[in-house]
Length: 187
Image (cartoon, rainbow, N blue to C red; front, top):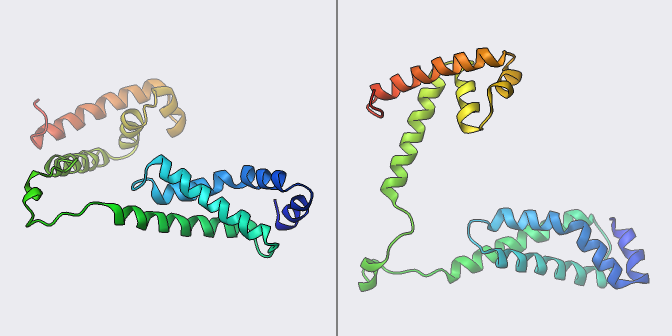
């Protein structure tokens, strides 16, 4: 929908114009807002932010200002509204001084040591898988990370399914031996 189409539609029926604009650009605005707020905001906050975007859009276009690119305006407005909402959410976040008596009783939702160990293990595993070389590393990645079967992998890399199964089996044995050498598996 262009600004001129919206302009002519709002003159005949403001409700239809608002509905048409919302239907066309809701997904676009929601995606922008969601990508900016997904880690910091609740789904309700995201929906409220998108509603604020459309309220601003409707107010601008009701004033008769139909200049410029409508999609660009909505995108820019969504980004700015999302940044503002992010700042509001972060301001409401509770901060506690480490000198405060309650600081010792606060617990984090994550176990930093376990997360660090998990990341290191993942890095080491990926390193070992890549060291298998091609096409073995691709087959292992496709089989275990992307849940592809032998036929799908064979189609992808230009091999027969039976050859993929055999090479995959050999690559798994090599990988197990490498991980056992690192002390990560028992042989």
